[in-house]
Image 1 (cartoon, rainbow, N blue to C red):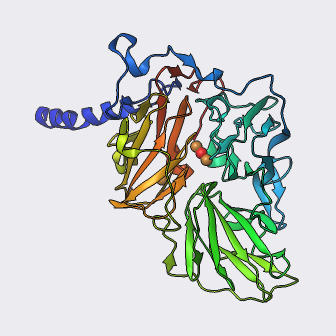
Image 2 (image 1 turned 180 degrees about the horizontal axis):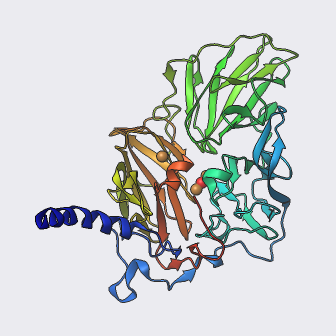
Image 3 (image 1 turned 180 degrees about the vertical axis):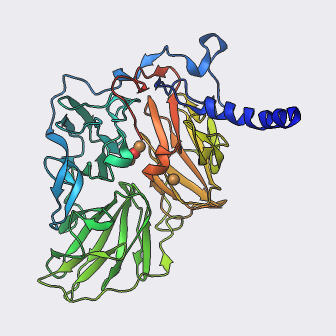
Length: 485
Ligand code: C2O
Ligand code: CU
């Protein structure tokens, strides 16, 4: 009996300890989370305690100058409510200015964009994150990392310069796995100043989103007629706001991939009979020259844009088996970053194993072998050239999203990139794949680097990128119940 008791205790005690230890405090800072990974570069000196040091410049200072007037202004009011999509379907979710998707934020290159978010009735609070826009850190919209959640009755003003051109989007980064799925998002389009050069005749933004299991484009379902004169050149900006990858292809006309994640493809080839995968959170700008018989842009297979005059009659072509491989698509051009001369080299290995997450037993995602919150703070200094190897051994696909920076793909499974420079903020990493990417650490602050299958992020599939000399005063939890994922 005594022996049996001792054996039981010996077996249960470590489990109980693991369970107890996994419980998250009611308030904690990402500055104390996990461990610092210096990627082979210089570490923090022993005297400042390294990673957990809260001294350093507050990220609150990382803004654009207050005295610069706005060129473009938006007021967005967030509500939790039951609303009607453009298709007539009623959805229980979240709106901006009464609808979902929210208004598209349009600006010209170089404009100072000012957006005021007012939370009228989202009980958990809300924020706006500018996905793919490399804003100053204090404008990144991550509750508990770059600001507090904006509670009902409160407002927050985002100000940043449209330094990039192309297609981006915004969404809440407070309880994002609920709020984004429920509709708290919208598009962002920044036009180049010389937009007339090589521009399209028609420019369409296609916000694709699954509400309650039904895929929609701009809130519409099924075949969505889009009036376009025959012979017109159309640019469709496809934004995947969902949690999984989406196949996109055309019927009745070939297409070209003009841009990926906002960044132009160099000398894009004509694609005929192949689909492009748009990863969760990612964007692809496609160019289609619409023939007299019309064309269809197939968005995942059950939703399409019908491009043409009147009711275009072109029929749907089945999903191609071939896919555009962005590793070899288009023509090479200088990268403007020398990955052979990297200052830091990181690994981001995604796997899963049994364990406890905040006291809950389960099969949880790991980052470099560790369960949340024991995840790395990839630590860089301003100006570093950084390489990262992302390896997926987890049995599932992960759309990996780095905030505040664009990275260029160097290789996949060891095969070097041979096409156009392929710049991403959201990268589809399939089980078994390894990607090598590079970026320049040119945007100081504390940034998320996570899976954009948002329920995965809420299950701890995330890490941070931090700059030496900066820290955030915000905390996860706390009075505003900040819960970024
Ligand atoms: Cu689209 Cu961390 O976000
Ligand atoms: Cu994932």
